[in-house]
Length: 448
Image 1 (tube, one colour):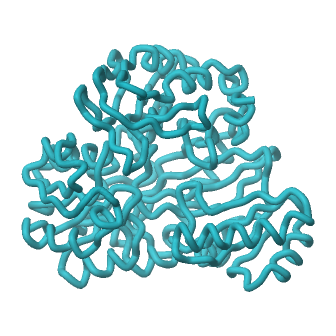
Image 2 (image 1 turned 180 degrees about the horizontal axis):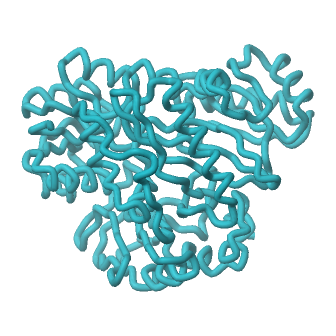
């Protein structure tokens, strides 16, 4: 096992990784920007290294600075968390070249699966079901429109290098296609430096369901069940849960087997997530692979009792998986709500600022992953996620009731600061959600 790990991230995931390291007796190094010098992870880490000013491009995305911090601190490995450099194949390759272990899949695997078109091609070869659409990036608007016309509307145009719910547009009518295609390409180029896009059929009433996998360097892979991520705003998740309500066990088992099949076929190593869409006929289709730990990994941990970060570290250190598929037991139901510093009444506009009061909920079977504290100034430079509230119960109705109690207890105050707690409680109280009959359109319906 590693003696020292550098955590190349910030916020709640940096704290989460630090805690797993501490339990395994691993020394931690936190890198931080000038804006985050007083952050929770900096206070908790064994060592901290300032790597740049507030803008992420000059700090958390500055690969050279991160590598230099690892060398100076004696870190043998880097945990990238999620976001930032976590799915950057070039960064993983640079780590390898410098004799530093990147805690994630091999660079070539990440490059193949991180590009959505090559990932679609890989899963086609592996035998996973895909929605009708293009496997290769589309060369021009004319060929793209011919494909869209043959698929039938609505279709969705997606950036090949996209992620985080960005770089995608829905087209409902043929006469909208050319304009939307050009807009999406321009957006993709601006956001990701890559203007390649592809087209696939759009499912208006789909469920977004993902499968957590673990794979080692010795050809072993397992899945840890599914997570439903259908409660979203602008294609970004707000609520995640396991098991997925209302889906037949036979279906989720087939999805799990398909994810393992895809992982083994591509040589995946580490923790990863295979994302699928499930239609109203309970047919499922591969969507993408996230080559990293997910924001919503705690719900899987709550029902399996498996520390996913610790397993990531063991696999990266070369250890074989300690679990076989038959050893995985799913117990009860868990729900995660993302508490963002945002105002839902203003289209979820971020509301950063000083927290004059921060009192997270507690009580039986409630977990809070956060980097917040009273006196913390939530910066405007980064993602608005402040905390994740996770509730476990023997059954889903009790988990919902427990979550509502926890959200009501959460005290966050500060000048101009708003959170999504009240809106999340509205989701929990919604009859459609309570019955497990919701889909990705729920948030839009609740907002009118």
